Image (cartoon, rainbow, N blue to C red; front, side):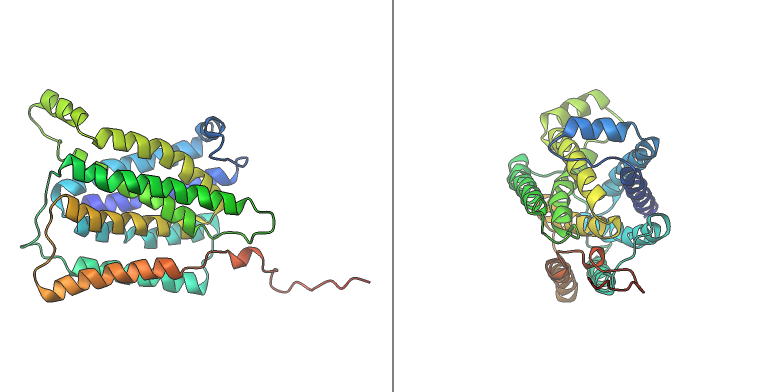
Length: 302
């Protein structure tokens, strides 16, 4: 629990620092990854945010060694509250009433998932068949890259309304969901004895290569999206997709059984369905970017 709360704090601080650094940089694009990396690596504030995210990754490894996948996701998503507070305080981002209701519904949905857990009955699995992991991860990676590319093409239309970043968040969330499964797989090789053999076994598994792919593409895609959209919206969407992806497909892939009790099973399924329905109903366009300031007068042409 302590490691999960620490990971939440580090991830929230990391995303806010990166967003603040990106706000002062020239516009970045996934079509120019070398330029993007050169710009962000020249920002001390962005490097500080990245170090916080990397430390959160270390805490996440500890969590996956001790908690079931679904339980870990329920705790991770509680960090959305801290993220929204930091975004409002440090970035000046304000969420709309509809978005606040959506975030509240997402927290309620994932609370239902947490309530469906039973410490005495739930087990922590440490291994999954490699073909099954690849069958889950490869199509998800392709879907995430395709969805991001589609959002980019639509965003380039001159007269299109400003996007909220929901599509970007879903796309990056799919990549981070695969990364989360890879982290779970890597955690199974953490051992205090036979380090050399453990490293060789790890290199024979698909997990380090999935982490490299999601790390490279996720870095470029997330930074471009984070610069264009509000962190207080895109990160919660990304986090929700990641948590649902990991909780549902990770539980099945790693063989962590669903609850046998009808009430707990209903809570888990209903929470998952509620979170997905909220994501589908969230606004695709940012109305606040088109609204005039309060008190502004409309100018009438002569």
